[in-house]
Image (tube, rainbow, N blue to C red; front, side, top):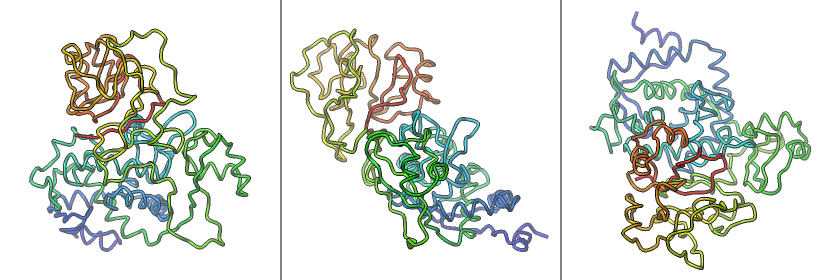
Length: 438
């Protein structure tokens, strides 16, 4: 008896020769169909687990779908969240990946999520989904095919290259073969299984925006007539039972029975850059005044006392960073940084011969290093740079820079505008920055 007939008799979805995935016409070779069948059978091995994931998906997917639509990526990418974590916000992998989308610490920070002693937005339903969509968009812009972007989600942008069939780069079709990366095969299997099992959408969560002083969870729970344990269960992104001060937050409540079901509306979605703009938010500032907040605040760190003065006078009037628009290469809150304040200048000064030697990667209007490289604490990435090149330029240990910046591949191209820390580890409360990938 063929395995296809067994699948039909047992109620499992059959593997088609062709399907639509992420809007692409997807051809599946016979060998790949056999591999997909094995993944489908694996998902059906433990029915109680499968049924629990389906029930969880019926409640949580509407909020994930909203985030994916807002960023502008295909809705089929929602199955990656099921594949990664079974929609369990508390899931932690052996490599330290956390949350619905299994973000590692440094990757999460690069795409806009805040992780500190109070909150971990890898466990926030909308924000982690929007961040995953931004990361997948970055990989799509690099490899020009959603299946390859999915492989890059697991392998990284450079690591995905050996698994890419260049015949399908830039096309709205793809062919699944026996040697297609297993992670992509599993993504297809998850769509085949869960698309047929998820029958409804339950809008059980109500997102509520909050911005103000730090507020304990028990006070909010009391205000809404629920227990603090219930409130924290609905908001696993709160590491401590308190909403942070000034940080724009969205917490979730249960929809009361008398309120009719309606599609979710994330009130703070504007904190994320939609796919129509060529940049991603790497960190959201405290307060909701961004991007007009360009001056130092009371809680801004003071410049270090023992720093060599710049080799030329800085302008008396501090120039404001450029306005936020699609043509802006990078927005850096220079004047809030303890080291950047003295070691970098923006807008750039006239490049003397000495400054040109200190800035071998300089392009156009990027920040300019104004102290000798041996004394620098931070490097601002320019187009096409890798950590290996930066380490060689500054004469620093590559292994140490990898540790400071949590970078696995020293030869991968870094995002334009990213800070590379040269003498200390990347801080948990890194200040706002916008970057673009080349």
